[in-house]
Image (cartoon, rainbow, N blue to C red; front, side):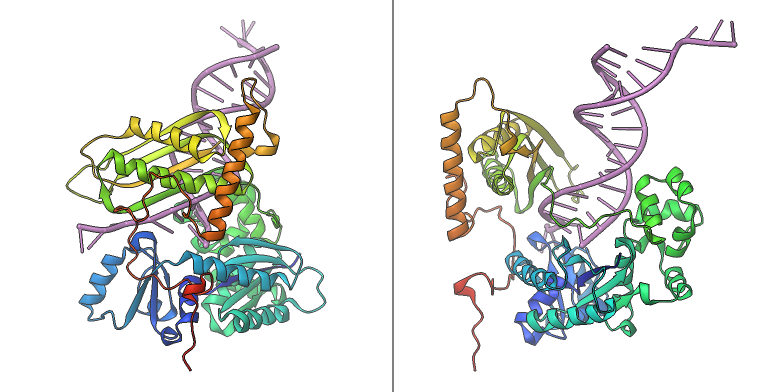
Length: 428
DNA sequence: TCTGGGGTCCTAGGACCC
DNA sequence: TCTGGGGTCCTAGGACCC
């Protein structure tokens, strides 16, 4: 097998730069929901030492101390509508190179290049050129016989400009592959995080090469079967298949940090209603039913003047459902049991659990088929209206258009490619 | 003052079955 | 000397990913 992993460079920041040529070589960071943490950095921002996942207010403080001001670093709120649309464009372009594609995340995909007439590295360069020309986004390509090695190759291509964006491990001498793996710390291998890295280091495994050479049975004894598979994949033995179609989700979550702390049950109810509505939409998009819904509310874990408080509760449904109204009723029932007056809640969320396909449903003896059909027709209409006129056009009346707790987004760019009224206009 | 939002898989242990 | 021997299902918690 010959697999390629194509990954966009600094994806969110690059999407912003495409529509803002003035930001091209500048330090750009994109912030998480609520403008909380740094989740993407342009090359220049990385050079400034801005760290991934760092709370933005801390970054700002640090930069100020270094005499670096907002004229040097542009911070933008997340614009998911834009990123999702750009992602779709990239994925469609890459799908033209091979019929076998697995979209792994918003900014990367695996492609099966097995048996194609040209050398893989040549195809890789054509992919880069095409995506850059058609979308303006730079990508790197890693090529190897397994997913883990393709990932690793991509990592190398990003690190060292000498690869010119494409690293094909299969075209390399065995000794050169070993050299590359020897230089990579084991925690940078896909599937090995900080915790496992510590345990592996205790076994004398420091580099990707060490893990590749370690006896798989020992790895399994000391860690788990997942890490054993990673070690085998590093040897070129494929343990992970290409998954061309995304399986149905097993749980659907919608949770948010609030823009301002919430203390009243009314506002929490409004938020939980909004989050449940969104989760139910996602559930219907996969033709699913939920058997239970979990509700979570929590106070800030960061404040020093109050002990953090988090509570959650699972509410089973009498009948599996995808009806926003039933799900909201259950969630709010759970919320009333959790709520404690006087606490400053900063985050809440719901999880739809025990998902099954609507088509495989076992109707209850007591079910009313008529009511069921009416519910389905109503939800289908709701979804169609919201798809056509924009999310939230039709919603439960309890949810106001711009609640006080809504997320902060101080500087979101326009939805250039998905809203007629926000299209970029060239001034020539 | 300000700290994201989703997901997945694996394992261990308990309850229960015959 | 010996105290039955398998199984399945569920859940919580830990680890990982982007």
